[in-house]
Length: 348
Image (cartoon, rainbow, N blue to C red):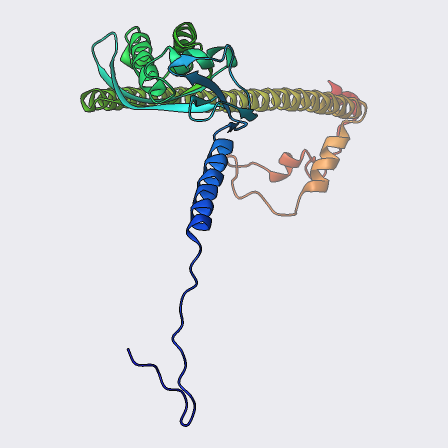
């Protein structure tokens, strides 16, 4: 390989060579680096950290070397020999969806529920090394069948039509049964259970809708009957009120007629009594007048002739009583040349 030439007119540069370590030093550095890596790995494998939401157990060659759960914090172990298994002990929820159960009347019901549970310290080692595989890889798979069984048992004692009304009692009974089973088998603490959904079969829903419709029709018919009865009662009350008004009006008119007749009768009686009294007074007055006239005529017979002559209008009567009648005799006047009889003769 030719040397590279420098700038024009300059001398040629020698080729660059990578510096080489002495073989002994290179071997020393390799061994030292491996030792450092081994030491770091050893240090890192000598401790472990447990989180606040966890507890742990330690196995050594397949044997559990911890007699009680290891709590949160920094802990030491034998590197590359001890194996640490952790499990979550904080509150957790296991959801069971679309579980088909059957009621006492053989109706299928689909339910979904969630169970909130906590792993106490006393159950940590049991769940890690005595349930399923080692560690916490299949805890929920062991819980799920028990939860399904207890739900099926409770719903098998219920009739389909009473599920909605007894929902709280059903949830309480499931919680009680599940808590007892999971505590006795796994040592878990059940804090709550929620029935998130209950779905009935289409045939049952159709029958419920038909029953509701029939009930609504019956209520509507009952309301119609009640309305008719109420309107009839109103009509009766209204008719009775109108009859009472008419009776009161008739009674008032009758009483008014009676009062008017009584008033007319009393007025007639008073009028008749007044007429009778007037007639009596008139008769008594006429009788007194006649008596006075009689007394006057008796004491002076010429008064009659005088009164007759006084009342004569000077005309002769148109009718004569026979021949030879003298009209002056009608006036009780003596003929010419004759003297008027005296009172004694008149009395005779």
